[in-house]
Image (cartoon, rainbow, N blue to C red; front, side, top):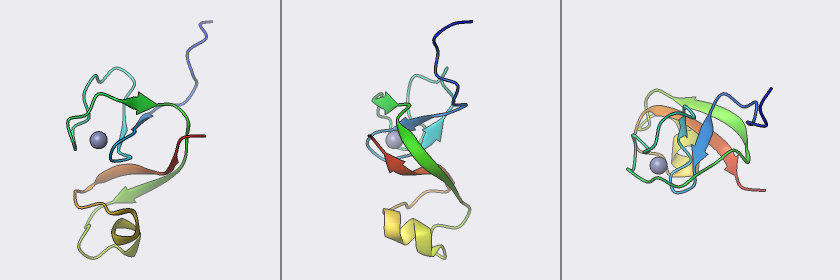
Length: 70
Ligand SMILES: [Zn+2]
């Protein structure tokens, strides 16, 4: 066993998008700053109609963390 975090996704620090650990760049904002310290997952299908998306400032469909950081 390695010491790799068991979470299946890492969160983009800039836009909170959740991406697979093997990805090196965020598909949403292009950032390469990620953290495994995130909690809560929200899937946004239609940012224009999602209240959560508005609350989090999300304008692209995708999978996001509700909270990023410790
Ligand atoms: Zn991002």
